[in-house]
Amino acid sequence: MQAIEWSFDALYKTPELPDWFSELLTTYSQESRLIGHGVYFSLFSGRWLPEQQAWLSHLEQLSAKFRFDHISEHFGFMTGQDFHQGAPLGIPFTQKTLVIGQDRLKRIADACRCPVGLENLAFSYSLEEVKKHGVFLDQLVEPVNGFLILDLHNVYCQLHNFNLTIDDLINFYPIHRVREIHISGGSWEDSHIAPGKKIRRDTHDDAVPEEVFQLLQYMIGKCQNLKYVVLEQIGSALETPERQIRFQQDFEKLDAIVQQENRKDLDVFTHSFLPTMYGSCGPPLEDQLLYDQQLELSHILYSATSYNHARQLLSSSSLANTEWNVETWETHMLETAMGIAQKWKDGFY
Image (cartoon, rainbow, N blue to C red; front, top):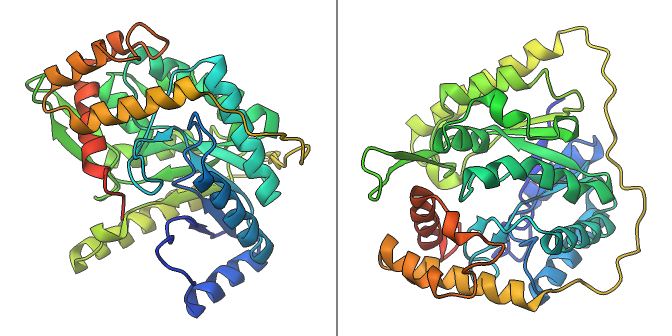
């Protein structure tokens, strides 16, 4: 069935929804075809921020007005000191960050009273981090009986940037938790540190590569609890008639793949992913050291004037010789992190 995914926190500059948009959301909500996708919650922030509480209150209000079939968020923490600035980047996969992430997901589940999930991250600092990401996601969502959005363009970024095959990567992921798949386009960026190396970026600003459609065809039948496949693209990338036509063509190609899979006679049990309990959160968990390190890393990524400068700042920072493992970060991925942070420091929209 067709559905709408709404990035419900992206309209923070719009105090009131237009009537036509509210009616559209209501129509899909009444048919249980409305799903929500958050951008700005900053799941792993080491401190519980007033903006996070406001985000949850807003979600609770929206969930009383519209019926969401599920709610999802991005993995990572926002690099910006302002809540609606920055880009989501990864954190160390430790017990400390695990329990903070689990705490935040329980609060999201309490606010929306529906299935809650996370999207896999496109960016990683090292191959070892790539290998651990899927297991960490599984552990994060387990207490809320949560699901995974498998973003296949994010997967495509990982495959290219770390020279992996899809079979290599997918073995690290809890495929049984995939309830939704995203596909999108992105961009290539030349590395100045590693000549000849091209970095794949998840910028959502171009057509879907053929390789991502091939990943969709390969993965769609493997995800037995899959319910939704969503095409993403930022609005600023649809300003010309040519780009709008290409976006429509991408959607039609996606739809054809999905319909082909739907025609198969499959007896598949679809997991509900409903949370098993609510209302047991207690005070928000915090870690001041983690928060200070996040602020310091954000400042380094924003302010470093070169890759070598960034390395110098990291080596003398509070992140050195810690579970962040900054000493093992791949050269081209640290360079990419600087590019991401500096590009999005003023926000996505």
